[in-house]
Length: 350
Figure (tube, rainbow, N blue to C red):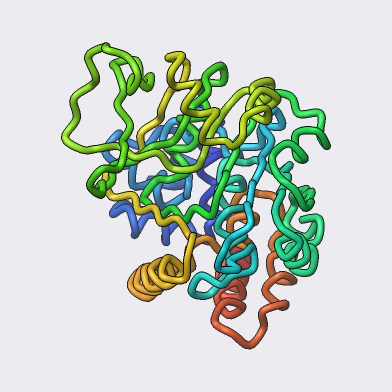
């Protein structure tokens, strides 16, 4: 372990989060001299402090100790598939204080995926073009088209690995970035994200074995857990699997076939995660009410795309301010400007 590299990572992440050394020390319950010592490469944080430090600095302990401060992995691409919705819900539908597309894009930005293709309806394409363009202002590359998965696959020469979001999935939970990053480590596996969820009567659920393979369709002894695990529409897979996926009637059919071959793996999110499929206006209301409670009680703006892009190092502090200017005069813009001024002040103090 490179102590000096860890120290530089802590310093970078602290400044990016807008903390002075004293701010960070006060939140952990230590002296600012200890933080200074870490940043100068003269020692490492004690184990008891690492988890709190990683949460405050918006990273995970493994990345922190590796000195990996920004997850920019060019071998990963992203695809969002937005099928037509009977209720007219689309990329621009507002979930409390921000459009649905901001939530979906944030999943990719949180783990450093910058090259993203979005396929959907004409309404989706128009909204994204008018609000986000090609993503340049956010430090990402967006390709938006009308169609479905096969159009996305045929339009791009995808290599490496792909994160695929196929639906209007609202997901919230603590340490989400860390869970996603861990799921991305098994690059050779076709991995489906699952989470503990209360199941309605008659609804199928995911059964897995000790190797985290789906075994719904064989006689092997399943892993016994306290909870039912339900799939969520987020997949991590080698890009070469996509061509076979497009030959099926829909993505769900392909997943079922893959599971039947005992080739589908799962990665389990922890208890406490909330997932809402935004399929009707009741779902929109549920997600909006949930977001209002979280933001009012926690004092932060969850899935603020501008903040995520800045904290991941995709855009500069000045670009963050420019994006905030677009929302000047409302609470969303005020929040972005507060980030800018807080971080700017901490820079001046040092």
